[in-house]
Length: 192
Image (cartoon, rainbow, N blue to C red; front, side):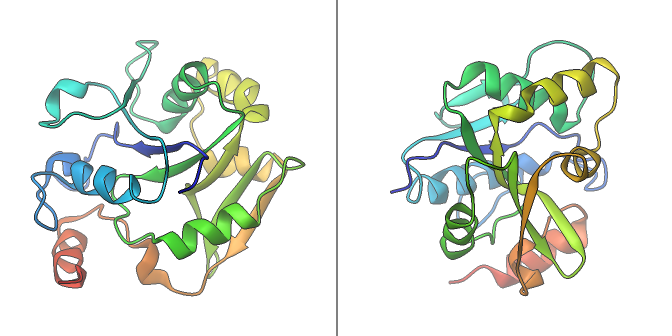
């Protein structure tokens, strides 16, 4: 088991999906969120769900509720809330809508991480995967500033920080379920 805390980001708007994707059924589980929590709990000792309202989920878990600073669905607010809740100096961040990021990918990211960087992030052919990687507490002041200035682009933060990018070749591993057709594709890809 990996001792680094893992946080599943499940506080987004789901505007492109047209419904709350965190609550979509997936792989025999009532919700995609419960699927992620269950499978990641077999990899990490401590798994948390970052969200705006834990009452929408029909299962018990470790929740980190976003602070009520402003009406934002950007992950910036979640990062500040997570660092304020967790005592750890770093944590593994993963989006709820990335159900195929496997243990091999996670281990590769962790083994490439070091205390000398602010973040270690997955990258596919030219595309950064900002919600798949390790974030260090050294970024908290930058997140607080971004929140104050209403700037929420994670890629901007990563470009302007000491970020270690780890290259991966398999795009399907990083399939994000943003649109209905991607959800349909993911249902076909679920291993039986």
